[in-house]
Length: 245
Picture (tube, helix red, strand yellow):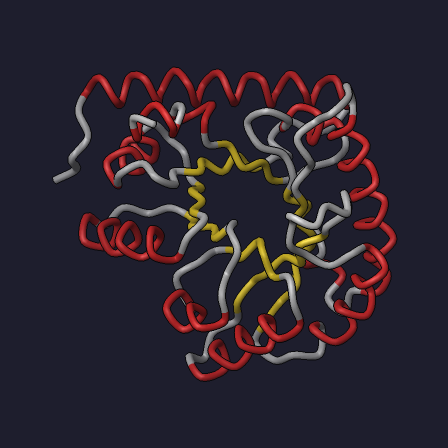
């Protein structure tokens, strides 16, 4: 049986509804089609009952930053016969790839050719095709992982030839804003790159995912064309308060 209690369910139900309403408002403002953004609830740090309650509230997509947090939640969901689309959104180390092949709907954070090659090898061995995004470091921050803009086309060409991986699009993270509108500028530039690269993608119909925007900046991301937003705090709450730090 699920572990969550009624109070948690009600809290998440309200938060998810508010996020959906906000996303809908942003889509209207941008002149985009209703339902054209996928809401990913990022349950990192929070225990599995939070993820269970979110799915009970109708959330279909969940994201985790770390493989060691993703795996026990996937196993718990399997034991309960709960269904959702799992997204790995954090940095993925090559030595952890073998544990998640076949368990994710989408890996957002492919940031090197070597990582893509490992995903390809493990996917081939397991007879599955793994959907991935290339992580774009558009802001140029040294603290951020990912391909610089000028590295994306060569990466797309090489990774596109690998067996058993399918490149779906790009993921980016905006910097913590030092001035109003800084995040939106990064999102706008990422969208331009995304659109420019579409002609180079070997599977053009699959090139349809632009993952950008978190709790603090997802509205700007949607206005600039995001198809997937990664929302943690606005759904599950403040992680620091939960951890007591």
